Length: 325
Image (cartoon, rainbow, N blue to C red; front, top):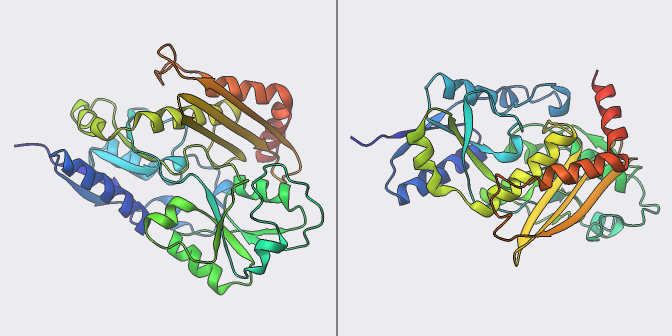
């Protein structure tokens, strides 16, 4: 009898959608699977800001435990939520083709789009006087980038699954809140009053779905390998290498984006101080050829991170570590 893969997932609407996508894609290859629902610590505590919880893998560690205890065979995650250092005994089995990597602002009043010049694509616009405002997010990365661009704005904490967060925005007196485009678009919840923040660099691996399994489970690894998208796996590896070299955790003001077009790999990355006042960044391209097309052998993300560290990033990173003590 063929093995039926047990897929572990959080029970939020988005997490279930992602796990169901994996289930359906596996079925296309003749692989049977079933979902196992598991609630994470990040889903239980909906008050504490993620960056203040001081826990790596707040959305993944419960699923890690289920994997290691063999309650499930594989786990499906939003890749941006996965720590750069996987738990001992757990490995990456596949990365699905990436959806949108962008952040969006869901706003209350369409006038803020013009007033705050939200459609400007530049990462380094002249700030000027853009007035005051109140934006909600639990992401320290989004907070830092927003305050860099809008230093007179206030940031409110926003936790919960996407449905809960959208409801809180509707019920609040905030001007808007920041979401990942992929999360809302996948479950068809993106409001009309929303705009892509083209100037905001995403979290490393944002928009990608990651499958993990036990290191010694060769059968599950083989089954999941049919879903792996090599280009997405390469880009997200470089982004996560960049994050790991700078600070290591997913709840940090580090952003990175690698893209491949016409055999050219472009990389943009940055680190901000928590208050958004300081920034160190890099933009760099390399040509992919037969000598560097194997993602296991490319250290480009580490090289970009080291360049940032040498050009102001080390000082910012140290201040962040000191603040966390």
